[in-house]
Length: 171
Image (tube, rainbow, N blue to C red; front, side, top):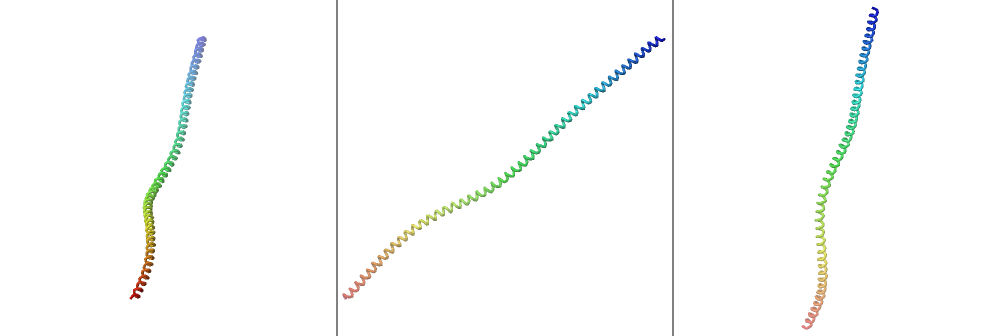
């Protein structure tokens, strides 16, 4: 019996050891599995966190790029408004210059007419001066003829008076 008990005891002891090792080994397997799962979860979280950080960085970069593009668009819009204002001012100035050009053309036409009239008046004045000089010369000549005729008339009167006086004497 004792041997039987010893055998049973050895069997139970071995069985307990096996069960204990088996339990220990099962617990170790569960610990390893739990550890692996925990490690995978941490790796997944790390990967998600890294991707989230990458997405946040890209979002921040895109936000900055958007702000820069908005600033550039604002500058371009301002430049466009300034160019439109300059264009409008240039169109206004062009209109004013066109009016001034038309006014100057009319004034030029009037000036040409006045110059033609002035040239004609100068020609008429020169012709009138020539005619006046001719008339003065004629007047001088006529005065000379008149003076000569007066002298001749006076001489004829004297001759006539002398002839009449002779005729009276002769009678």
